[in-house]
Each structure stands twice: as structure tokens, then as C-alpha cells.
Amino acid sequence: DFGAIELNEAFAAQAIACVRELKCDMDKTNVLGSGISIGHPIGCSGARIVLTLMGQMLRSELSLGLASLCIGGGQGMAMVLEIDD
Image 1 (tube, one colour):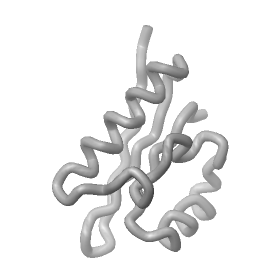
Image 2 (cartoon, helix red, strand yellow):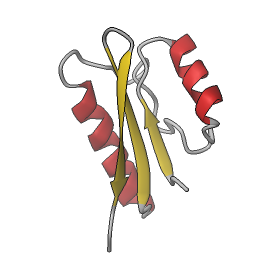
Image 3 (cartoon, one colour):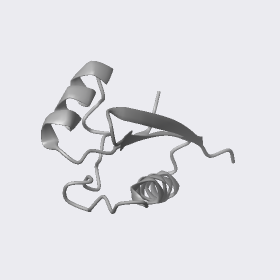
């Protein structure tokens, strides 16, 4: 079970669709904000997402996190981060 989920989105409708389809726990999803509120800079939104997730995991002592990234043209990718003590 993921302790934190960083779900990238440029549009709220896309984020809602992903949350519903993946059945994400909203208490664990984008708890520090999201791409709409924090920003999703072209060319480095992946770095922003991964570093936001890593920081949250370290501060909250979580071992498993999920980062997702939308890519132009309807593509996407995801990464599972694990912090091993």
C-alpha cells in the first residue's frame, strides 16, 4: 500500500479521472498540493513530482510512494519509490 501518491495533472478533469480509475486514497494523494497549485514546469515536471514525493516520504517516514506523470499526446508513466532503511 502506498504511503503517498504524487499524481501529476495539468487539468483538474484529468486528475479526477485518474483518481477514480485508480481508486486513490485522497488522504494520501497530492497532500502538499498538485501540478495546478504548485506548478508543472515544461521539461522538469517529472523532477518536481519525484522530489516533492521524496521529501514527503522522508518527512513522514513512509517507505513506499507512487509518482505519475502525464506526457503530451495522451501518454503517461509512473514510478514507484521505495525508501529502504
